Length: 106
Image 1 (cartoon, rainbow, N blue to C red):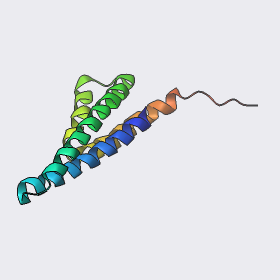
Image 2: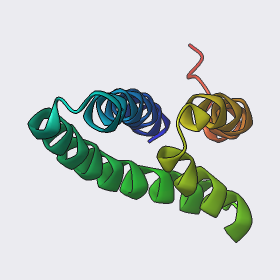
Image 3: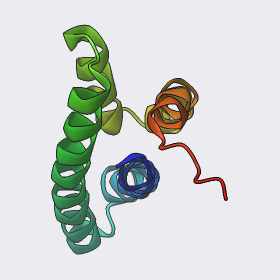
């Protein structure tokens, strides 16, 4: 579940940066209107998938509501998902190691 979240966090963050660049070209230079629409729709679908994966991770890690909300919103703030993802990985990795089964000794 952590790997799914990480992948979607990076993909969503990159697509948001691409969308921001498209918006600059659309409104700043008057070009790329159709491309902006396509990128916005792709980012929207990817963000919904990100929400599902982040919510799943947050519910399994038993995050408080405020933290879960911050992680969910970070997909809408350019570059925030990169920083939030790193923090989430640092916090969740010890939980995964603690829950791992003991190796079988022969």
